Amino acid sequence: MIRAAFFHQIRHQDISVAQPILADVNGDGRADLIGSGPTVWFGNVDGTFQPGVSYGSGGQRPLSIAVADVNGDGRSDIVQLSACDSGGNCANGVVGVLLGNGDGTFQTALVFSAGLRI
Image 1 (cartoon, helix red, strand yellow):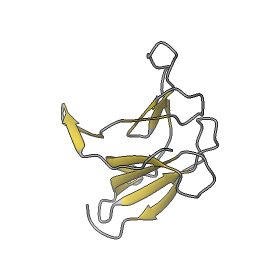
Image 2 (cartoon, rainbow, N blue to C red):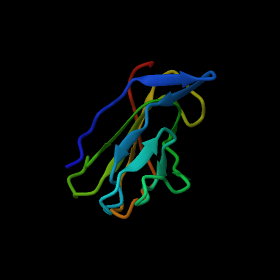
Image 3 (cartoon, one colour):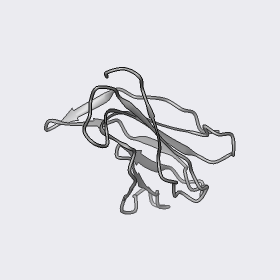
Image 4 (cartoon, rainbow, N blue to C red):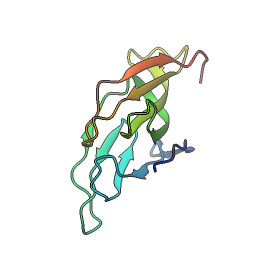
């Protein structure tokens, strides 16, 4: 079972990044690393990670990220909260939902307005 959790953002050299999450998103029993962007790094048997694959979240300036099965299909999905939309409009934050395909890949983000300035 994968639990959803949002984490506090961390700042590094003036770049705001959501804290990465460890979750098995491709079903191989190994922890994969999911970071803002979102970017997914698949875990190897020896504890190292493969090169990352990035996906569009529909937003800019990521604040929080979560991994959960949001549509009940048994696959890990990614949810990312961003301060601005993809065009840079920061009047309202956006939530990007990337539905998982079950093999560690994700569909194009479904983007929803957060309805408030973040």
